[in-house]
Length: 157
Image (cartoon, rainbow, N blue to C red):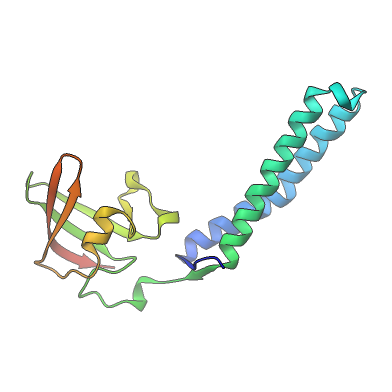
């Protein structure tokens, strides 16, 4: 049995749209490639046909994974959680005690994590250390270069 995947309504919509595109346009494009390769003759020595069939297998695998993800997902909203502690979907402003730098992050599911957008996974070392903490508390994160110490300045939605 698969584990429940928590995601925002926006992320679920993105996955549903991608799945629809793969099932329609993606499958149609692969079918055209297979038909084109078949028209070249002997399938036993047809590299284009083999490549198209491999591509079809990868497409179907991706469709299967996305379908499974949707089937095992639950939509969550930041409004479901209090804002006195850090939870999934919390936005948190922290001060790095080592560098005095102030940063903002949003804690999200592993599927939605995107460090460039300051979205960190609740399963990451930083996410795990921030979870459950309140404003004013300190989170220590063990990193290869030592320990990063973050003070929680603000929690918001």
